[in-house]
Length: 231
Image (cartoon, rainbow, N blue to C red; front, side, top):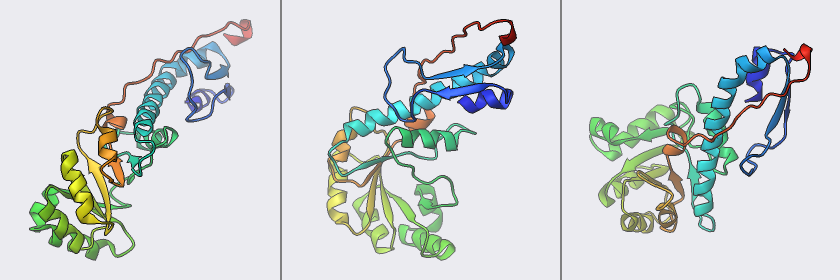
């Protein structure tokens, strides 16, 4: 956020008063920026929009992370990010105590239902993906039933996504998987349900709304007159 001011005017002086990921109370002073009023006002709205949105992502992440404390599950984000803000939003997820899933299509493979339909079966989809990316790239596949789960594991998937399953179905899937690959719960997970999901024993819980729909925090810039030279 502070970089916004120095992009507008390199002469603006910035001072951050809190660390990324710090818990702050309402009304806390977060940073001080000093420079000409013209420069500060030119950068104000973009800076505040960024800070409010990214702080909202970190806050939403922290609330979910706190809910699953004491379980073995980790909270991860998705690629459902605001266009142009992926790197910043994923950094905000980390600041909130979560972890990043894949950054894009280049660093891991995620096989969804449409991919399976085109390939013909989970086994064929995993094989085609493995032939394309080699052994060093993680392959994850979405499954919706125990039959698909067994097929995905047998095909050598590294991660299985338990998509929109009930808590009981997830618990059964974790037992069937038995450590043969990692498990990820996904789909419709909220602050009210995330702990029960975590208690099923899944390795990861992915939540898209912490980036694409997190409520922005209310932040403001209050100017203080420092003399004619500040105009």
